[in-house]
Length: 150
Image 1 (tube, rainbow, N blue to C red):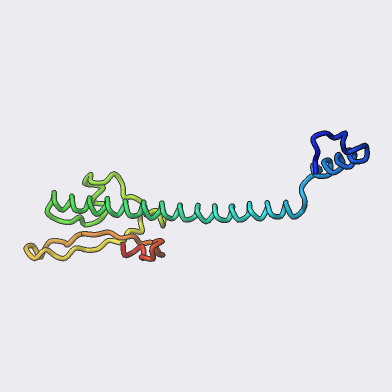
Image 2 (image 1 turned 90 degrees about the vertical axis):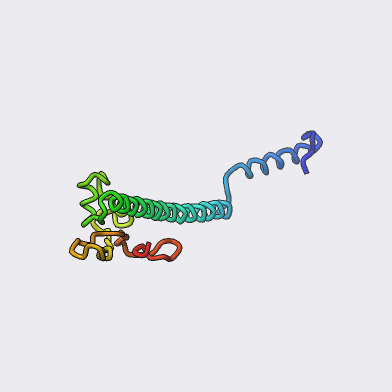
């Protein structure tokens, strides 16, 4: 019990009150330190998990964007020339792409899997060309879909 007038405690009461106050300000107990350290560890572990998921989500979004853009360019090539490109390099050499984008999962532009178009029944002697592109990366998206199916 702390009184508003310390003289009311008497000479022994005031010194006892000062010792209690001095002892409380000396530092933290071991339990307090352990609780704080464990809370910091839990928060750090949660932060690392969120960071890893955000990096993976970014890679997946970039992969989807790259696939969409390459498929769109293949369609533009077909609309302009009446045939599909023979390779992804033809898109670059004909000016449809500046460069072949890299697969963000594998960090390489050489891992794209190309899908050959069906032969044109009106012109069976023409080479079929590429009508689709897929990722050559191993693994699955966060939703469980394999990279190679997207």
